[in-house]
Image (tube, rainbow, N blue to C red):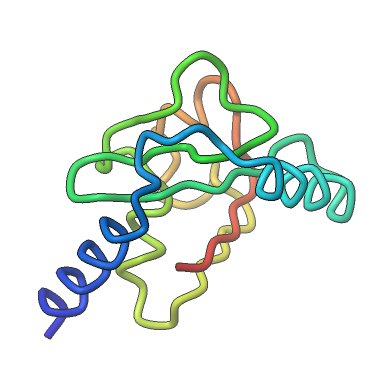
Length: 115
């Protein structure tokens, strides 16, 4: 059943025709507002396909707008039965302690995501 759900998610994502698209102003406003509301330096909207994470909009993501799905926090979120994933301290969570987004820029310390 997980495979069916994931296949449906991937087909739905593909139908939106947004992978590799430029971010849109409305989404950029959302990430900026999230930073202001939660008083954090980083807010992202990312899309995860079969093999990669594409950063669609964000306040801090540096040069590259994509990474492998294996490094993506969001890959854990979309597979989470409860839907929402909250990691209060990435340094204390074995799934993320050695993740490049924790050990290098943007040095994520907290994560909250919803599919």
